[in-house]
Image 1 (cartoon, rainbow, N blue to C red):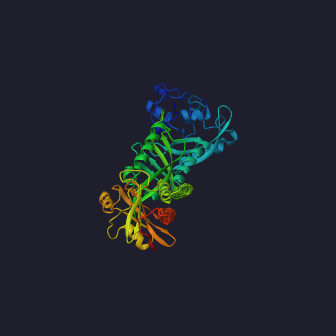
Image 2: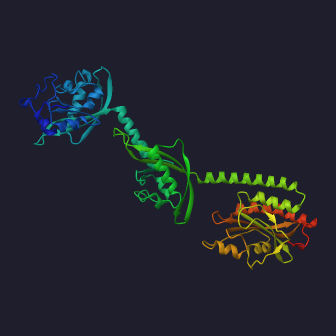
Image 3: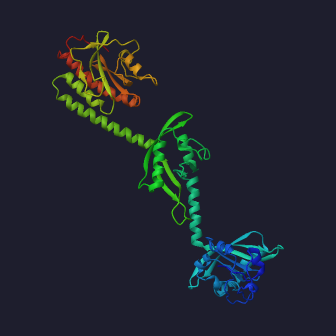
Length: 474
């Protein structure tokens, strides 16, 4: 409820019924509490619906309006407040009343708004520090008709300012990417870190589907955002791998991501406004962890292979056993070609039709007719490791032309050597669904080839490779 004691300020803020229309006003400046005059329902609803406490004074300093938030903050009802002359003796200590009244009413002689902080008295006897914003109310002729004043508790104001400051810091100085996504899963706000991570400016991603910004991995990200909208934030951050399209080509990144569901604080029931997505690029750390895990696993496989080979009576069995251990997590197929004069003959390999152990070729070694420039021949000529991959869409044709299993799309050929002589080539093969061999893979293949080469050399010395001419000097 709100009420008016002066026709001037009532006309300026909103017409209300005076005493001649049934109102219950008292004389201005009387200091006697008066009941609120019934005002238009719209004005009363607007004043009482405000989040801030609101009061108004006429030109003589008499309280004319008092809303529900003011009652909540100070405890004084509209019936008790309207009609009083200023705050003296009830909402402000008498010692402070003159200064408070002077500062509030001074706004009538100055343009714009003024901000002050006062210690007001509650009905319970306590004191509360408030921050006020006051402004003059002008009459129809432009002369000052009174003052309106909106105020709130300072700690609530500080909380609001702190929240705003936090939001500004998140979107300017945060060392994490921050993206606000609406319920349609489209970015609405992007901070500087996130803009750099996405390879775009702060405005370019706004309103665009995530699939336009992320080449691969957008489905997983959208799934996480939908889950947050439906179920709430996950208990802990998660790693998301994405591939971005940049001017330099495709770039794969790992983002450590956390999510928050955003809901309107003004609604009675929580209404989803979207999702706050915060992430940090941890690609280098994750790749280092993966590399450490891979090295640990491969070292363990070499150790197990050596122990297994030590228990084999047949050196060739030791060689194929070492290759079986090497294949785990490394390649899909392996073939062993040994030098027979100037040609290569197939000595062992895994099944061409699917996964399986590396086995010796039954019935003796079979010559292979490799064309000039074949990666295995290049490895023998260079006495070094050679990597090769099929062109996009030419996988089966490329594999057949090189006499490898038809699903092969990436090859790594490592030379078999022992006692300074070249014995042959071991070729590891991967399917198109896997990545091409890289330099760390070549180093691992060379470590395996050393063990296989020693076993093949021992097999020759013990006569296990009868019918296959000896190797040439390296």
